[in-house]
Image 1: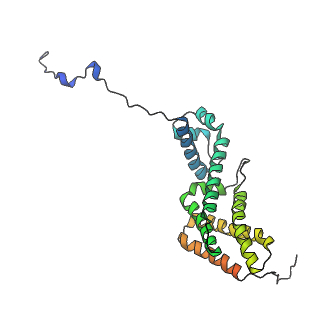
Image 2: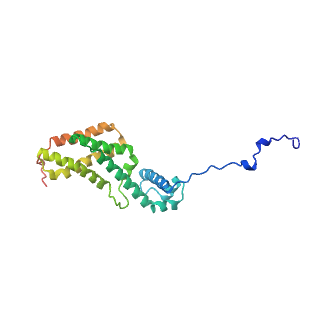
Length: 226
């Protein structure tokens, strides 16, 4: 008892019982790089390259601007890595889907692969379909579509030979088919109707039955001939 006031020694922390500060787990260089890539990917998809700043990327990551520069040399470097990763992911998904089967089934697999990517990696697709503001060592979305078309070209080439068509025209038709799926995918990205399987079915329906009734030597019926 002190001055008529009771004291409880158990309520007073001793010097050895000072409140402990929560330890911040420091990221490794690889973990920080991955964090910055994910943040950059989200911001580039939502705001585009021009609308995203290094300051915002750093703030979202809880680091200073020099950390972003240390890992990527700036916004351009971060953007280039994000685009490169997404292009590789999409190409791998499409080429990996083309397993053995009937040519029509292969068309279905390719259509599903692109729609799967759009559904699962929406941010990545939004970034890819934008016009790149900086030169890319891996090219553009158009060049990526061309790479995918090259895979389809082999399938069409074999089918053309079986049907007695000129296999040299397979690249042209491959570009047309893949471009059709890619553009439809951009539209479906926003509307998301009908469901994915139905979109794939309609795409293949148009492509396959168009090929099924293909004229060996197509002709123009309008007045313009050149």
